[in-house]
Every structure is written in structure tokens, then in C-alpha cells.
Length: 312
Image 1 (spheres, rainbow, N blue to C red):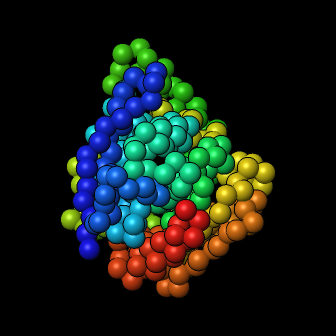
Image 2 (spheres, rainbow, N blue to C red):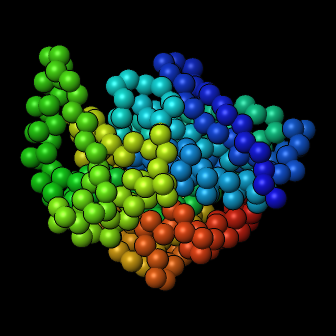
């Protein structure tokens, strides 16, 4: 059975803009009922209509949960200026704001809230779980620590040099010049290969985001360069040995790629203080297979539904 969806907009007191979200509701939804709820967090450069929404939120709602997926601040249909900012601290705060909205809904059981995230969203929801005790269980799907990625391959392993460039660009923009916006991906798989790109994650990301396979208006795959400095100094897994005590499910594929989900999944599983934690490594599976390919996403969804069914 397929549940229904509702478009929502919400903000926390003191916040200057709305977040735009979609509530995925169970097929047998009853407004007088009481349901466990899950916040679903989209990848870097993605949006609520892509994998975090149309795959994972949809399936977990079908499993009986109320699931809220939303566009990050400065992205998609959410507010915030300047546009296309990827700020990890704000992304984590967005998750808290989404929970603020969930706990106001009369049919949500505030003691049964979980979090799930895909790619960079997996790192963000893990970070949020460490400091927001309202999240009772967390699942990372091919999760990536965007801080680590920003310091390494996204800066060509020269983070100080890139920070100098970002600082100079921000000064230029403060003096009235246009913002520099960079696309994370080539225009097409063919263009990427022609330019010498051979990394499985870059090529499969391009196939997902730049074709009808996954392309949607809100999935910009780009970011304002001068505002990416915050990510270079951030770490999704900081203090996980002390603070990440909630039940944890990590799902990764066994095909490593340049975005590092295989490495990051192994790391957070080992470091987490959680007494109840599980690492699911899917064979012959890549990072982007876990975005939308039926067999691997089916296995990930089955594991997540069982996990949340147990812990929520």
C-alpha cells in the first residue's frame, strides 16, 4: 500500500526563513492515532524529492512511520540567503528544527523519533543524534563525513590553500562582486570521462543527478564556493566515542569510491559508543546503487524498517 504525502513549511522561533518539507504518512494514517516519526535528511546537493524522499521516506512511511523529509536551508524550496550554501552546522540545526515541527504534531509520539540520512545526510543525522537526545535511533545510508571529504579530495588534499581561496573570494563578494557557484559534478558522464574523471562515485553521481534517473529542479549539485569554508573545519564524527550512544545502523556498499562512504561507515561503526550498533555491508554495491537501485535499496530499507521497528 502507498501512503499519502503533505507539503509543509515550518521554522523555529527566531529563525528568519521557512524550511520546506514533505510529510510521508502511512497508508492507514489516522489523525487521532499515535505514530513513531523519522526525520529523513538528503545528501549534499540533493533535495527532498530525491533519494531521501522518494525512496527512503516513502518506504519507511509504508512501514508505519510518519516521515518528514525537507530541503536544507539555502537550498531547494527552503528559505535563506545567500542561496546554495552547504554549511554543516546549519544542516544539523535544520534537523533539530524538523524535530521541533514533528513534536508539535498531535499524532507524533515525541518519545519515538528517529533519524535517517543518505550520503552527507547520513553524516549530518549522526552528528545531530549526538547532541539532540530526542532522536532515539539513527540510520546512516552510505553516509559521508562532509568535513573529512572537504579537507581531502574536495580540496585536492590542500585544505589551507583552498581556505585561502575561499577567504579571498568572500572578500571579493563582500565588496559587491557576484558569488562564485561551483557545480560538484561534470555536465555528463561522457564529459567527465573526457576530462579524465574515472572515480566511480563521481561518474555515478553524474548519472544520477544529471539524467532523468534522478534529476529534479531542487537538486542543484552546486554550492557557493566562499561559504564552503565552514565545512573544512567540521567533523561529523567529533566525540562519537562519548556522545553517540543511541542505537545505530550503518549501511554501506562494498565498492569504495572517492566520496568515502565505505571508509566513513567503517569508522563511525568502530567509534560509536552505542551498545546496540550494526554495520550492514552490501556486496557488489556502490554508493549510488544505494540511492535508487531496487535490490540494494530494498535490502537497506528492510534493515532500516526492522531497526526502527525495534527501537521506536
